[in-house]
Length: 359
Ligand code: UDP
Ligand code: MG
Image (cartoon, rainbow, N blue to C red; front, side, top):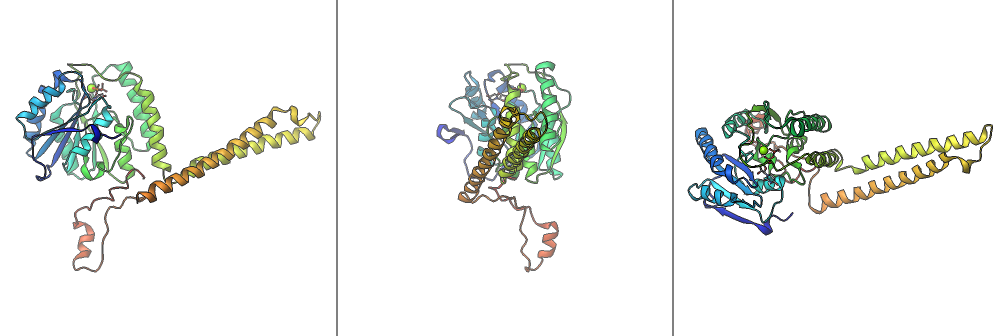
């Protein structure tokens, strides 16, 4: 998606200043009643923290007066930055744009509907200060409908935790904090913003959870229905595939191909054995013969597909010089004092920024 094409950034701050400690990214889609109060609460909460900050509002093609409300907030506040989409691209795209427009050392995501409490941002940042790379909000006492929201969400959290191996109680909570260097290389598609903790954890980031407050929506409507469940399930397949096999797709397709061949061999063997034993049925009347041929063909196709995918992976990595690993830091021996530096006094160097989509 070419976000740049439709880009209109309103900035009341000159570029090039020092990067703020915290960037808060807020996606806004038809939240006109919430914007003013949200901005007030956010500014109070951030002001109380005593850290430099910026707020990046991403107006995701709102069709109400959200943008005008945002401009009101930006008019008097140099910390505000508004990115306005040309049309509605979805919450994930909005967060991606927020990542790209923000400059903070730590990024905090927050919903624009006041369901999350801006006062909780301090809790998340405290854990980041302890050394965690990702701090995930956990809506312990959640105020959403049970059947359409909390139940699917419980199932989703269980499944995502199982499949990704990164156990979190609330993947769906937007209120999360990320160290800039771990989130910036991530590229999001579909509904994937909820998988960021798993994606970055695969790259070696440390993840923790803190309980946060949650309120029922007071103004405006939720933008999602039950259909989101299917999209999340499909995204989970993509995430798992890319996470585990993006550098070795033949392992998936090849194993499937071998399994098909094994089954084909078994079916074929049964056909032969049955042919040799009484009552000596004709092989061409045996449905297992058809199954054997079908499975053998499927096996060939799977392996061919795996080989094609291997070519694609090589093109992807080699044409763009994308490494298949993530470097934390490189220590050069020999320089005086480097032994103590290697022992941990070095500031963390940036991870190889291009390497994250491949774990
Ligand atoms: N949102 C967005 N684009 C969309 C849908 C939602 O930017 O296409 C924003 C929305 O304005 C809100 C946040 O994402 O700030 C979460 O949306 P919502 O509250 O509807 O989701 P829920 O809390 O019901 O899961
Ligand atoms: Mg909400």
